[in-house]
Image 1 (tube, one colour):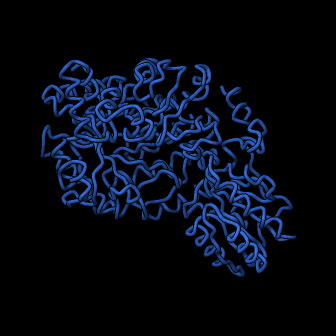
Image 2 (cartoon, helix red, strand yellow):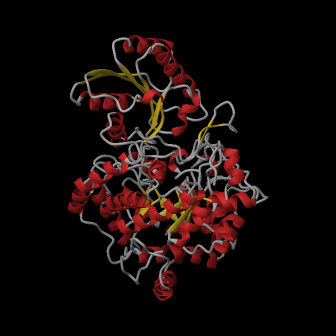
Length: 605
């Protein structure tokens, strides 16, 4: 398939094997054998027959809890749920699942591996000593890269999807997912809402971008399947998202409701192949998107609330038998038109099983109970979802083994083997896009390097890594995401005292950041004379659209420490650049014109 512009891409684009009660999630697992699957389902059905209506409804919800210990009070738990501790939330509402976040959201569930494992054990203990005594699905969003990740250091920082796609290696994609899963499982997280199965054919996509494996449906399909094998081998359930495909939008569903204008043929050739591959690989969960797809639902309901998309397409046409989870119901794409008492009911009516982060939990829970009692949702429809959720827990061995060893978590998270593998994986992702005059690799003779641009921590870190090399001197001067005229002038003055300048960029799509960062690059280029000006995009590869005349350009797809360390090694030729673009880069002023095609990537001569 040719890879040039978004328009041309659109025009040209074409379970687990587990016995009952056993924790047997294997690397190359296809959907489970019929006999084992039937036994799991029969046991799940038996459990459901003994549950009250309130217990069944509770299993549908995935909630967040605030704090780092199950028995530690937190004011936000009181504000949201009327109780003090995370364990109290579980006892009061008896949810089927919990999702962890880091301090950036305020839930602050992660501090150390041992602490997180203890939190998981405490929540499982609360679940198993209340209500129907059912274990929890404990989830998080750990995608890799520097966009969507939750576990902080010492967790292994791994390349994200687009970076892995730059290596074109299914083995690397599988290994990255396996490491992620092993570290999550060690702290009691048994469900990762990953990988993203979206095919990113829109350079201005604010929600997906580097979270996607790229613009080629075939490559995305291969790497989605490889990732699922890795998650299963590492011992954590996987979730393919965001169904039916969030890759062609310029609206962020966190804040608004995107519309996907693909035809049925385009959806079939571009968006759906990675989900078909995920289902064939035995993915545990498919997570819906808050996007409108008129070709699939003329009523223009968000996919999460659309029976034709969730039940008609995913469940019936694609034959998915696992758990269907909603994307977070507190996102703008869900709350814009669906109040807290409506969204969960509509999602269940559409065919979803798991209601993630429903706002105003008490209101949402009462709305679902009322809908079942008055027949808006039938008892059979409710039971079908609960059976799927319990079967999922049975297949992953959560009934006999809900707890984890807290000491083992410390030995597993960020262990040396994981760090070494992560570094090697990252080295294979960096892509050299332009190298006019063969500026790279830089000579190792004594030189002074000015490191400037986006990200104070990133600029400081790269400068320190360069300065640590023999005969290299480096000084950092960060400018922020939108440098003004004074900052640009200061950089030009500082460059006068250096032999080389390295500019880190992170020019977010659909914003004025690109214009400001382009002004910095252009000012340095004009003042350079014969001195090298090197630009490294440390997130989206598309940054060069803003400054296409820059002579030397690399992209790392991420601004994690391992990515920046790999960048320095490649700058000096310690390791060769081998990454290839997983997306085409269109011109900013004319999206039909391609600056660099899919698959482009230079090598050192």
